[in-house]
Image (cartoon, rainbow, N blue to C red; front, side):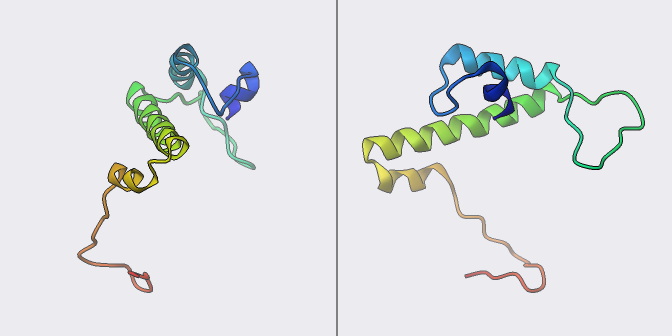
Length: 95
């Protein structure tokens, strides 16, 4: 969202070149500090692997949005798989 705000892009419908720019921006821009956090050393940057993981999530959201727009709502469930836990943490609701 920060990338779209800085570039004044429509976050709802990014094009291919905007997505390429986003991936480059993810790697070249320092990771922002959280509120109240002080960085003791040099700025921290995202790795190429982290940028790829973020782009995968962005692509999956675009796919779900496309399916919803086309009315293929039942098939959007095929984009994810249930994760069954063998051991659950105390107080975890399995329902």
